[in-house]
Image (cartoon, rainbow, N blue to C red):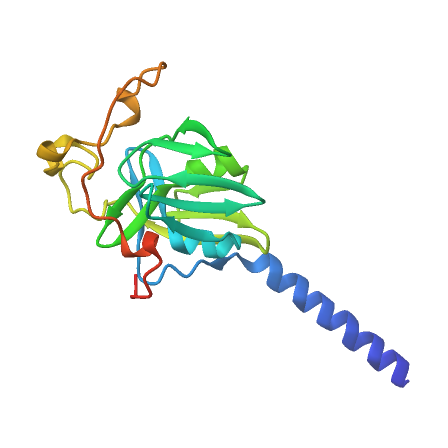
Amino acid sequence: MSKRIVLMSVLLTMALGLAGMSAGAATIDTSGATAFVYEGLSYLPLKSTASFLGAPLRWDAEKGQAVITYRGEDLALTPGNARALFRGEPVVLPSPPVVVDGVTYVPAAAFKKYYNVPVEWDRAKSEVKIKGPSGWSTVKASSRAPWHGGPPPWAKAWGWRGQGAPVHPSAVKASGSAKAKVGHPISAEARGDKKNQ
């Protein structure tokens, strides 16, 4: 009789565990930052996404780049610039990382393209789904960009005319001859500051 009770307890525990796993994905803690969708691309907070993936994130002050290392491969990102380095080789992101209110956002497509991380958009729930080492997780995404309308921070009209506007991917020629200076403050998040993001 006691073996039967133990067996039933084990089976019930397993069934509840499996039901919980299929009930839905966990939510990524974004520390108050809101993922967003702009011109068909979803942008995720870099620090939160790196943490979810278990990927170290560091700031290279000399080069002005946030460097995320996932599965032993570095992706060096310069806020405001679509040009990046993956495994030390130049690449062009679908859109530049952007800093808004001290938080660096990266197009979710960059994680999919360079790290082969599964990323999906759930239009009905306005969520980005991303799969990391611990399984699927979600991030609520706003259809309104956090810079409150107008052109995005990488556009010339944002106010960087005198400092040189970062290059949007559409302006980068195949030869890579487009030039840009990044004249904007670097996010506290990318520098690794402890301040709440």
